[in-house]
Amino acid sequence: IESCDGHALVLEDDAVLPDGLLNVIDGIENAIGKNEVALLYYSCFSPLQLSTRNSRALTSEHILMSPMCVEGLGGSVCYVITREAAISSCEGTQKIWAAADSWLDYFEKGLVENVRCVYPMVADHLGVKSTISSITQGAWRRRITEFIDNSELPVFHWLLMGFRRRSL
Image 1 (tube, rainbow, N blue to C red):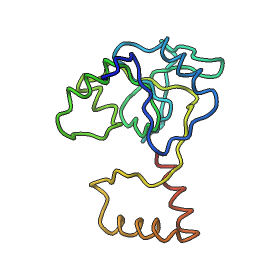
Image 2: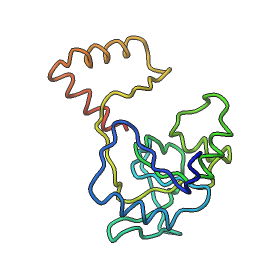
Image 3: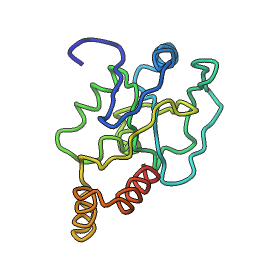
């Protein structure tokens, strides 16, 4: 925000970025609205349907599309946010009230006017344990997963990583 740039690329520490990412970002900068977020990686708790209405070609391979429903959309490891969306998101959040990538909450509070997705996804993630633990995770589950993470038991660690990759 302090730099006065019109857009920012936000990355989580487990983001995997491909070659050619800058071409997609250049396309996003030309296609994105004033108060908008463009997700380069995303997940959804239900099947995600993207609309071709108001879609914009970013490259010969990537399109910026709108989700039919923002509900359940989250887990973004990599996204572009406009300056206006960043400012309104910061001003509208005095204390933690939602996950940082709970786009429905930001949308419903009017902190961002639009959330769109780059299709196909550009970025990926490593599937490592999140540094932000969930309050809803039970004590036993947390202890078991911490034990598996810390001891790196071959089969169990591999399975846990696979579950994490599928759930994000």
